[in-house]
Image (cartoon, rainbow, N blue to C red; front, side, top):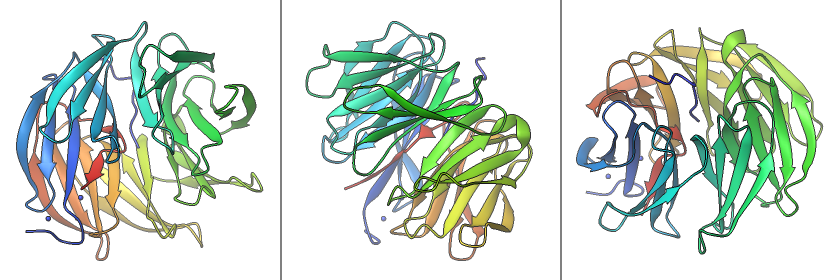
Length: 310
């Protein structure tokens, strides 16, 4: 098992949405209809799927398969794999540019990030980065790519036009998951070995370290930028933080060994993939109460943004 440790929702409710959950243990992706909170399909992908990125505009889901060293591309209209991209390396984290024209992939073993054109996959650029890159996020203005480098203990900021590293921000020990607020103001580094998160103001670069649970893994920020959610991998819990006061609101028990987390802001829910219990916890973000648990595949990870709106 490769524990490289990454991450960061109806009849219709506000939106009809689907969650795509990577199951590293059985090489599948579980598709959850968040209207019913049940799995509607299991899709066979590459070996040891970890990362996920979704695009409503492209009608695609991109899955990184770390052991088969490739990316599965799923057509969301029929939930079938339509293409597999071979990667010379071990893809883990994945995200899309704000304009959906570039797919960014963190190559965990070769210490680099790939920038792949979503229209011409052979058009790939590479930037050498810190040690063991994992979580990725792109600024809303499409100008900056943020990369969490686990073994370098920093966040690298990359110019998306030139792929030059603009600067590095030192954070806690072993940053893995990463989250960026909707406006791009707040950047979050999840520091696995420090049991903390770094909350960074991207305008001033002021940084606040907040202790959370044991072995935190991934994070997500609400659309109104008031609340931060953090999965605690070894505490079987999710920490809820008030961003304006930078204080912990509560801690919620979820499944075993929680990893990826995504917020369905339209329907006020948090979805958390649980590696140890092979399921997904659904939390009401208004009440901070567990609503239900959805059985998925073996070793669910869902590292990245995994909820697709239709």
